[in-house]
Length: 107
Image 1 (cartoon, rainbow, N blue to C red):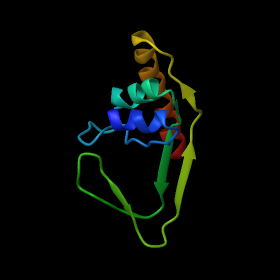
Image 2 (image 1 turned 60 degrees about the vertical axis):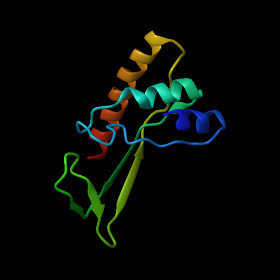
Image 3 (image 1 turned 135 degrees about the vertical axis):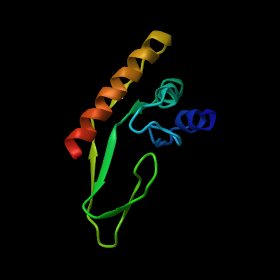
Image 4 (image 1 turned 45 degrees about the vertical axis):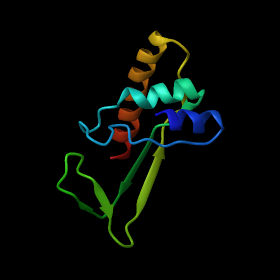
């Protein structure tokens, strides 16, 4: 998380898998919002889908696109998280809502 904040402060883009490496599936972890807040960055929800893929038998049902598969990427409305603990909680809720919107729209 500290490395992500450092990169954001340097003006670089950082991408997160919002449900983390262990899940549960589609449950946003607070580190994403905290990194954006501390790094002074906006959050842009992104959803990717493919028309043909192998699905792994894992907790997140990870997809590997098959050769010549079409991949569609959708972007949600960007937003900022204001400073402070209360804003962090609000930002986590807002990020979850926006991520759900873009995920449902893309499926």
